Length: 406
Image (cartoon, rainbow, N blue to C red; front, side, top):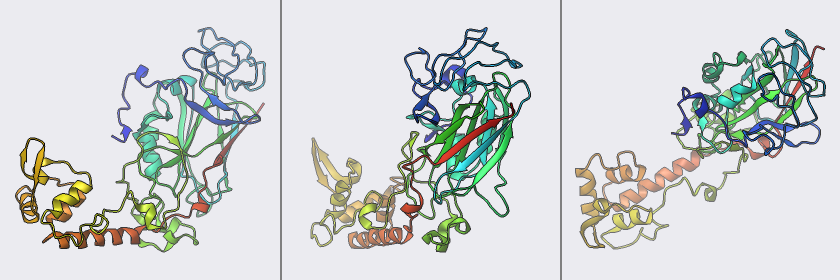
């Protein structure tokens, strides 16, 4: 699987590793904030924290010591140093999400207010691990339903919702735009998580994970690659529709832009997004196009075993496919007619293999070579790609600011 579909695992199986990124970049000194691991002081980022009555730690942002308070849902005390929750029960905060990109947009925002334990038990993501199906669907399809199902009724979640409505006739939160909304933290429900997908990328997303809520909080978020889909960056493989693309994009004139083909597998783990690469030359497609006979030196060969030689060149090593007979380690290669006869008599062999299927439909090796070239030509025509200048992920792509009423 490209993601972890088991959202009903035991709580102790849902815990993150000790080095998970929980808040993007902190304001001020720009240091990365890390969740305190099970051994506490071994990991940076939380500073010294005051203990509650249950001997748990209240994690801060590394800015200083914390005062003491009671660890309960209706606690309305005060943390005596900057960075802690100072409001009473029922106080509200205003959150502003700003898209810092040039022309990349954000989907509807999934937002939840929760306790720290929610992230410990069921993280939105963990760097280096497979993503979950909910975040995968958000990144690939801009679908927030999975995120709501994953967290809405999970213990420790005070509020989970989807925020859209980005203005008149605005489907997405565009580059430079802001979205404001109100939250009501209370007691140990003092964390906010936000997630959104990218319309103009294959499986990109922003995630603020377990950001501490306090007046003046500011978080800068990097672009994430959730690892469920190859970064083809073609018009037909991203969730945006044809009408969504900027007028200066080739994809705005491409009829296949509505397809959102997610069939190319990705990296299989969550990482920082490496950005949109230029794919306008055939050399850049070497990992996707099929090996042509002329490139294997077989287009004009007189050898009667060209099918077997071609498939060996492509990395196939199945003796049943390649060999008429095997003696020890010696393979007597099938002739071309024998090769096609074997495929014809074994309908199930390689049924999901592109090259095998092309060979099955070919009259002879020369016809096979012509069909491979036609497939590559069609592929090259389809590779109208997203412009790299529009989607530069080398810098933080989102800013989250929090202002509270006290």
